[in-house]
Image (cartoon, rainbow, N blue to C red; front, side):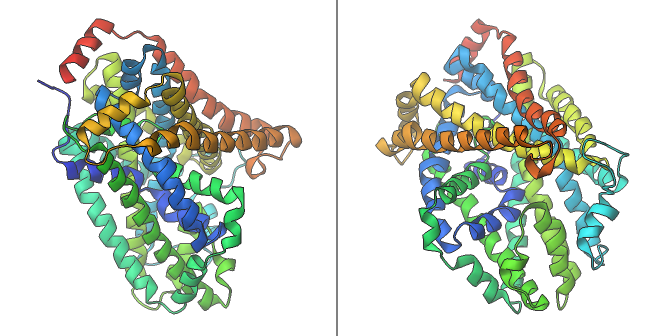
Length: 508
């Protein structure tokens, strides 16, 4: 009899997996990346990356979680006792991300309220940095806590920890059954309204017009793999943890394809909505679409408020719907990110789920206050860049190399997946994980290390975003190094091998 928590339905698992994949980056990162890397032509390397890296790694992680029935650390321990640290590395990466991801959701909550009367005024950039974030300190200084960020941050953690305390079926599954359909409906309303605006056609033309010359550039292909990798929630313990809650008879391969294409479909929808709105803004200001294109925080909290200001009618409602979409996308991802360390801590230290939520979520929420200070944006920016580039991508590379080449587990995992899935894995899956993905990720990591190390030793302010060497060292490199160091330290505490083996027999 299996005592491990389980999803109530297959749809519940898929919605949770898709909800984890669909995050803030789908809305504010993908459109700009696609535009900057060939427009419509970018979809060729993007689709290739999805089929050769995204979905194969999803299948890999779904299979690991399902076969070994544990959080990422426990699953890797059961695969090979010497590889538990790899699971903890991904868990700690997720922990770090949760500390600042919650703060961005808090911004979106504030802006949902600001949207009704456009409190941001005409100079949206000054409002964000000066009036709202109160960014009046230098990088490395914290300043005081910003109440406008801190108060909604409390609400974010109450919702997130409340869902996690309710459990997998009654908490995570139920929340995603509400969040994801609501998110899709809200964003469909945004897209339908955006494509009917004057200038929308010019925006869509800029987004979809292919520049086929660009796809001969290696950087464009690297960008495609990077986008797939960072948008699918792979390589930082989430999908291994989620799939460990699947019933024994679950179609792993189909679930991976549905999750992968569902995430990409939402990215395409986001691109249509964003560029329709950018086309409208460009026409209103007498500029080209290229002159108003932006990504990241700037797109969401500077450019979109400008677009909302220009709206002919019901701009308050449109603004609320946009920022409410960010809140829902963010919460579904934050819940999945936090579940990784809740499951890992609960299993490793033999404590109840409630205690694991309160300890793990409590520590994360306390640390997140750092990013709600006047200097929080600088810490957030550096931590996000380094933990993404040298955390997620690096974990992914090591994970694939370890499973495919060191442990040589691909045949075993393939047999497990084929035994319960409608779509049988063929040579393409092992070719992707054994050759294509390691080569591409290896090149990405080599280039990233080279670029950032050269920056570090070039000039005192030649680093990412011009930050000083000292600030980058402790807020960037140290954060990325912290994840692997703590992962190794956690793995030093021994499991009760006999107990774990018995548990594994019970669930196999």
